[in-house]
Length: 177
Image 1: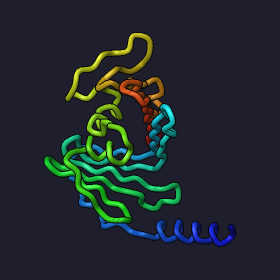
Image 2: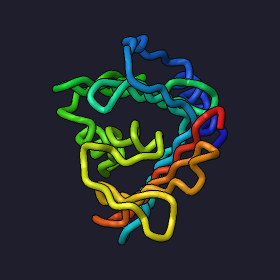
Image 3: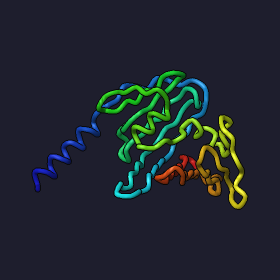
Image 4: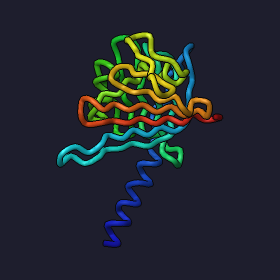
């Protein structure tokens, strides 16, 4: 058991020391940074899946980057996109995807609308799809997601997708708020 724990610790330390190629500078658009958590709820015998990381989101819905870091500051992954190209870079290498939806489906097992985040983090619906204001709360429904802006003044935005199953929740806390 001790050897197993030492091996796991060594693997974690080596992964933490791995470096990614430098990010291509993104010109124009927005810059957001903070903490992000994504939770895919359990359904049937499938267990819950979750991701929590520091994040850095830059650019626009059509060309940008999303970096994810561990609590210790090690880069876990970086997605970069531009029209016709999405690349995910991790310490294990890089992979190409046709679009951001394909990337999130592969990595999280579910679609997450990263393109819409640029507007959602400004407290407004994404202009690329219809939206409906929520009647009883601060926020709106868009792309099958309920976007909660009740804590927007403190830099918190959350979004929940109930259908199709499984339910998925995204919580973002921006730095400096």
